[in-house]
Amino acid sequence: METQFQIIEVADDKTRKEFLELPVKLYKSDTNWVRPLDFEIENIFDPKENKMFQHGECSRWIITNGSNKTIGRVAAFINHKSKDANDQLTGGMGFFECINDKKAAFAIFDHCKKWLEERNIEAMDGPINFGERHQWWGLHVEGDHKPVYNMPYHKAYYRDFFEDYGFEIYFKQFTYKTYFSPDSLSDIIKWKAERLKANPDYSVSHFNSKNSNKFIKDFVHIYNEAWVKEIPGIDGITESQTQTLFESLKPIMHDRLLWFAYHKGEPIGFFIMIQDLNEYLKHLNGRINLYGKLRFLYYKYFQKNKNAIGLIFGVVPEYQKRGIEAAMIYEFSQSGYNSNFPFKTLEMNWIGDFNPRMSHLMKHIGAEIYKTHHTYRILFDKNKKFKRSEIIK
Image 1 (tube, rainbow, N blue to C red):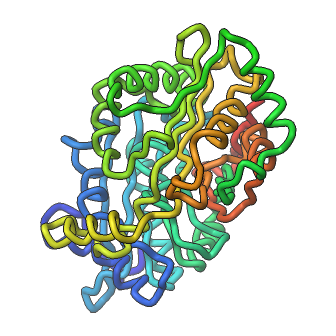
Image 2: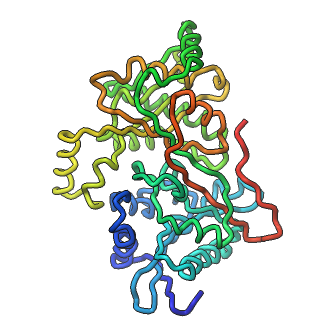
Image 3: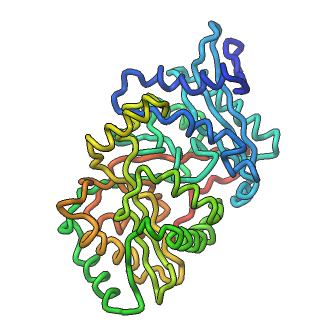
């Protein structure tokens, strides 16, 4: 590391503030950037709030220049449950921000690499989250648009930093966008949905907040069957965790944005959407104090949010390729949105290029790629062969 840089662990109020405030300074003239809520970022690094600490470890740092000015930040972490899901033990880094100085950026990458190597890790993914994949994951590289809630937005020069350092694309994540209209669905979607609807063993219904406990149980079952067993590195979820998740999402939940599919009454699939909270957060400057709450309520009730986010599809493996996704989308298009439905656009977040079936589905609902994120990986041993993420078949 160059002597003019100093890397300092975040361990007190002063360094925590520097960690949170650096992006504010970097993006102050960028109208697309939306400041996250400070407490949501801090919760990621709090063992009492982030369940990843139960089987993982994490450290974060700021980097200063010779004038003691903060010019960068980063976190590095290991998930001990998923680190050996690859050909090499793999850790992660994320929450990277830096001024336009390649030497500073490389000093940050070197520090993360050293921290991971000291813990016998052989590769590093980044920029990713010390948590679930649907949040703070990937480097925003294409589509100069505002980020959706809990997704990153980055400086264009970061891409050169990562790729010049030696990171390679492990997978791409696409965000698709469509305008709500039943007419946007292809004939194939309609045909699949009508075929499934004709079978009385199958049914589709939207979330009902009056019976939330039932739907939470259904969500847990589908998530653990459809995601945890199918994709390496995805942790299971409990009813208690899901209850907490749904409680936290309550201010932005809308019953007709959450859809579930059933076979003979058993849950087999879900299509989860939420309001894009960034439509409100852009007015709050990262803080939910009394003033922030009042502003949130004002924008929620007097300036209606018109953008929804498609968070996640899930179908239990034995029911895949039967048109379950099509049925949920079709039912949503028929009874979900209408003249009284407040949302006009839907951003389908986090469609990996390793999942061509979902990309194919996006075309059939009239959605087009709107933004692209890259998840990079670097192997510390250059003699090992780099492999991209395997395609889901």
